[in-house]
Image (tube, rainbow, N blue to C red):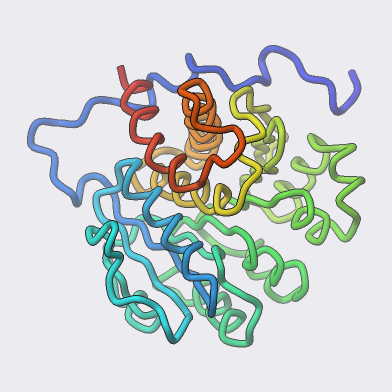
Length: 291
């Protein structure tokens, strides 16, 4: 079988997820539903962190923190004041974090590099699962010492590259990645010892042991700014809520696509569909999958 051929067992379908989304206990509290932090948001890119944090909130995380590098970062998210904003210096003091997502709007400054080194090397951070996206991936591709730190981390990690970011990580070009999507995702997962979500039409979820799944949901409406940030926050939320890393990646990718499909069926898009609308629809998708 050719490497990019797919069999039915490799498709993401709704029946895979019902057992993952169990009803919440009557006496549940926010601490039982996971704590997630989103880090990034350099100058002019704070919106990326807010989109990811809002997606984490709307997908069920009990506590959501947002941390931004920008000096002009807001003190509160006026649309969702439930999100707790922290400075990058204050965030590591939180002991209750169940997942940290780094990358949305991060930029590629020296400060961003130092931040990655800190989270990759500090003993207190070694046990925290991570989701790495956007400029975190570009920095890892550009700096071999960061790549080595990712490979050596004790806790599991998920990376969510698009074709361009994947190409940089593999030292090739985007065209080659697109022609060999399954192979590229599997190589990334094995090389960096991570779960890889290779985004795009038919997103690929690949495990370091060689397992992979191809998403069946989604449509071209997702080809707009910020939808990747929403996916990052969604996956991080599922990890924080206790899902196994590979399950969190698969469910995140599938639910993300279903949200876009639902909106298009309602006449919202595909043209002009926004990432914020996808984030809001995720709440409906998750509650329907839970039934």
